[in-house]
Structures are given as structure tokens and as C-alpha cells.
Image (cartoon, rainbow, N blue to C red; front, side):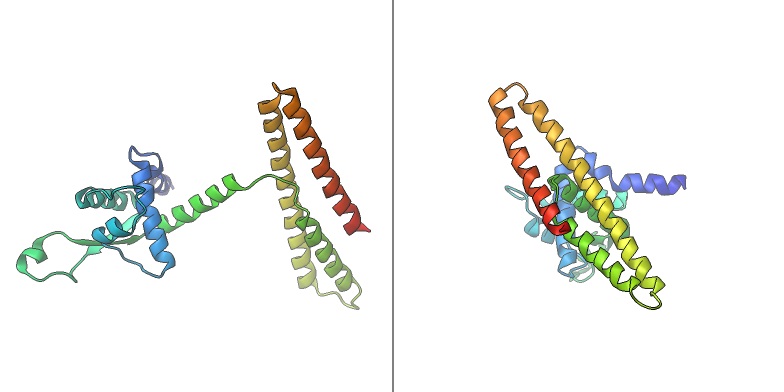
Length: 214
């Protein structure tokens, strides 16, 4: 268990390393290649395809970074024999790199994390539609002579998830309101303007809630 924890920690080391942005660009390049069903990349392909936001770094620097990422477990390497054309090439260290299983998991986790940070906390009325549809499904199942227990369980499970999502969303919304008020409390006009926008928004939400419940 301790060894597994240490390995998992190594997988995230590139995020806080000195060249974190450099490593992230490389990892994002491999993730993009994987989405295109290209499993392996060579160092020169990384140099060409990566979004460096400027001039591409020297190939030697990329090779060192790839080696470090492989050491941390984010990438896997294997000898690249496809370009061997001489004895010298055979003995020169050339490698192909691909995302490891752990590397894929880290990329997926970071994508979810980034999406959560970008998500704006607001009261989403779409959840009301989901609740209404699932309650209708429960009503239809209840009217059957012998309700299907499996279907009832599935609908109830989905309903719980919708309510949990709505609660999480409401918490994020209130946290956003609190942060905004704190930032604007020195400016009375800004607070009043924000208060009016908030009231208008809540009135629309409540109106939608009443309309859907009617």
C-alpha cells in the first residue's frame, strides 16, 4: 500500500516540478495523440506537434524531459528500431514513448479538475427537468400491476444523483455569491447592482420552478 501511494505521488510530481509547464505541454501532446489513436511518439514528433507557445525547445531538452516523465511513471519507453539504418544507429539510444496506464489516469484526473474549476456555480433549472422526468417514470412504474424492481431501483438511483448534483451546484452558487460580495463590498454601487442582478436571476429560477411544478 505504501509503495502504491509513493508511485501515485510520483505520477503527479511533474505538476509541481520546476519545469511544470514544460512537462504539461509534453503530456498534453501525448494525450492529444492518444485521442487520435496514435499510441507512440518520438522525441522529434513531440518537438513538432507540441503547443510550445513560442519557439520549440532543443531536441536534447525534450529527450531529457521524456526520460524524466518515464522515470516518474507517466510515460513508457521502448527502443525505437524503425529508423535504424547502420550499426551506429543500432547502438545509439533511441526510444519511442507512450502514455502509461498511470499517465492516462493522471491526464483524466487533471481534465476533470480543470473542468470543475471552470464550471460556474449557478442554480441550473435543467436539473428540475431531470427530476420531473424521473418522477414521471416512477409514477408510470408504480401504476404497473407488478412494478419492475430493477427499473425502480435505477430510476431512484438516478433521482438521488440529480438531487446530489443540484445540492452541489447550489453550494457552489452560494460560495460564488459570498466571494463576489466580499470583493465588491467596498463599492456600494457595485453591491447594489449585483444584488439586483441576483434578485432577477433568483426570480427567474423560482418562476421556472413554479411553472414546472404546476
